[in-house]
Amino acid sequence: PMFGINPGRGVLSCTVRTATLIGCLAVGQNVLRLLWKAAYYKWRYWTLDYAKFPWIWNGREQPATWRSIPLLMILGMNGGLKKYLDLYSDPDTGVTRPIVYAGFSSGFNPVVGISDSKYFSEIFNDLESFPKYTGLYALFDLILAEGLVTAKGEHHKNQRKLITPVFHFAALKSAMDVLQRNAMAFLEEELPRGNFIISDHSFKTFTLGSIIDYAFSGEFDKKWMQIAWHNILAFIRIQSLIRIFLANYISYLPTPTSIYVMLVRWKISRYLERRRQYLQSCNITQELVLKAVGDQQEASTSASSRGAAASGGPELSIDLGMNLADQLILGGCPPRAIADECLTFLFAGEDTTGSLLSFAAHELSRCPTEQALLRAEVASVLGPGPVRGVGFDAVKRLERVAAALKETLRLWPPVFAVPRVNRRADFEVAGLRVPVGTTLDLSVYAAHRDAAVFPAPHAFRPGRWLLPSDSEEVRRRGPYSFVPFIAGPRNCIGQKFAMQEATVMLAMLLSRYELVPLPGAPPMQPVVAVIMQPSRLAVLCKPL
View (cartoon, rainbow, N blue to C red):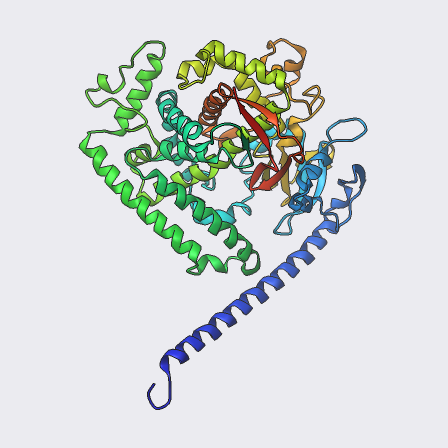
């Protein structure tokens, strides 16, 4: 202290007061913003005739009011999501309602739910009239940044063109080693010996490990990335809650989340620079990769591929040239853009495939007959006993396993709804004109359970996917009746990888264990955690 003044205490006090003032101003501004949006929403409701849209309460169609907010149901942990999704189905006839009023979104924008798949085609394919609703992705902009999920226009087209070879036939074939290695590690190292219980998040170790290998491969530190990824998601969840009150101000503040994500991106960028130098030393070019893809496609029925050998270079695989990071490096992307795409791949792929496997285990545990049929197919294709490897060609022959996964996706699509914004003045659904600016909630869940398309829509029947193409049930289906990976120019680019990944894991799991419901466990409930995931899942696995 000098002259009775403590500079340290003065600076600290000033900092605390300034931060408190900024926080109060931000919260106050956000409260005013929410009140303004609420008033604007109420005005829009009455002036744009949303009262004409049907809304559902206690299973019955009633006149809508501006206080009708069925969308809030999904926040309820005790079956709230299931109650909301069932609004589309008439309890008396089982017929799926083509359109329902769902209240408003987090931005106080009116939401109209659409379940008739005949409208999906024009909405998915006309991105100018029906652009993506970006409100949800804004909560995860630290991860997604300008990755493929949020990219727009020409940038999206260019990035998708660069990434496409990573999910081509040759790369998927090369990826089998990655999937088998991670599946074996999960089954023999992660799972306990003897009986064990599959819970909500059991498969995420396998899916995250596979995706990290497929995204980076090479000498990347996978264990570090797994820990870093879980930390990022934990930080993001906290920041998302804070952001509700501080609007976008938090994006400009050096929060622990932003600092941690920045450090993770810095380490990834260092790895990418080393990887770029290594690819140059191996004389790997994008032209060589594309030629290898084409040659391996032509040689798909032969025992070996000409690929890189025909080009005079090293043999390409998922560990060299065929993974996501390598492909973007060879395409000339800057390190920041490559980090965006790799983190987007982790965000989009970890939970979705893990959710698919969890729901599949739930359904198969309740259907011992179907489970026995799948296990018999696995034994006939891959041999008796515990499966230690699934070849690329063998995956194609596991038709009933694939059918069980498709039926699981029909009943429990991880992306259960797709938000779009209507920009077209003449857009009508079931004779009702939808006002411009309305958020469209395309209910994939309801479309998949339409009794007019899928007989016994709530039953788990994998056999429906093995019917001949000229059967009556198959003829009922339109091209957009089954869209678990969305459709159109923004469909899921990694859908073949996801199905291949799930097929490998399910085949290897069923060759080792019998799945049965855990006695006394409460019923499973789907919940929203960005995507649809099971809650209170309890499947008992018994070694065969």
